Amino acid sequence: MKFIELKNIQKEDLKKTAKKLRELKKLRKPSYNKQTIPLYVIAQQIDDQKYQFRHKHIAYCQFFNNTEYEDIENYCIIDPIQHKIDDYINDWKENVDLVVENV
Image (tube, rainbow, N blue to C red):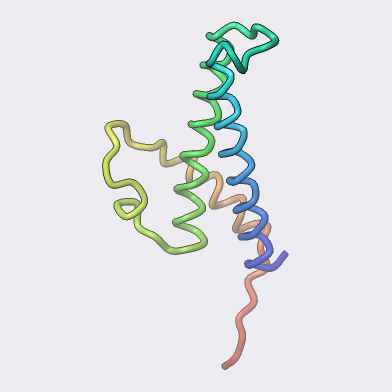
């Protein structure tokens, strides 16, 4: 897979995760929660999605855009788990065919 193809796939995946997170947050309101899902279940799903999104977003910015961590998150009380970010980056490195063009 080419680098740009992998970047676009991961970008779409981040967008889907963000959309799902917004939908889950709406379910906390009684007017949206027609199935009467317990709030603790919704809260757990939101936490899981936020955790996944945060680490994947940091890995995406560092791998595809060469952005430093300080430029991605300006202020955060809890540091991200670096091995989770490294896992995403290593997985992407295995799936991309780096093509060096002679210019």
